Length: 278
Ligand code: SAM
Image (cartoon, rainbow, N blue to C red; front, side, top):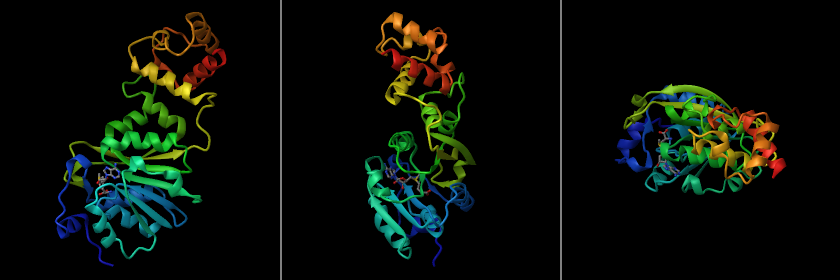
């Protein structure tokens, strides 16, 4: 088996990078190894890879997993991937926007599904949100993200990074930072530091919530008006002033606090109380 590096493949096909597709390809073998190790890929796993590029990470995944489906948007990469990975019978390629894929259909009856992605940063947040909210049968998502996004995922209440995205990730997952990746590990080099993080999907969400839509809507309202107190931010939650006051009392939460100080347990408690009084 010919083992071409990312740079070799780019040269072989005279591939020209498209900045708007976030095409920064990994060139550092230690990062490839750490992603595959960190994702804990075994021969029982069905891996869905998002954004394979020229397939260097894909090849490492194919050597370990039962099957890999890679989803790539750039049509110029399709023949390159087909050619470079043709000796792997366990490889499947989907030419599509990862935001428009029917993941339930892809997953089918597979039992041990792991997502691995090195994505353009502009689609990272919507992809993570749609994979989590879709409640697909996925065990983990191992993803390369901008350092700042990792800090938001791992953030604690009352810090500048804490927000609706932190609570979404913490509601559905445990998180584990695998490693930092410097700009020099990619061609071309991005301007920012990256982090590989693994999101392990919990069997049950971290807190018990009666009405998830209401829970996330309260969270969004609280962070849309970060500087406002909870009682101001939650004016549109569908309760009159008196009942809203009662909800804060029952939940034992001071309505003068700002949303950004509430833990996930406190948001759940507040949402459950509001849902009882509605
Ligand atoms: N995995 C490769 C690596 O590690 O070298 C490439 C990573 S590169 C940061 C991101 C890849 O995602 C590119 O190949 C790009 O064409 C692809 N891509 C961009 N937007 C996409 C989308 N919406 N759906 C699927 N793939 C996308």
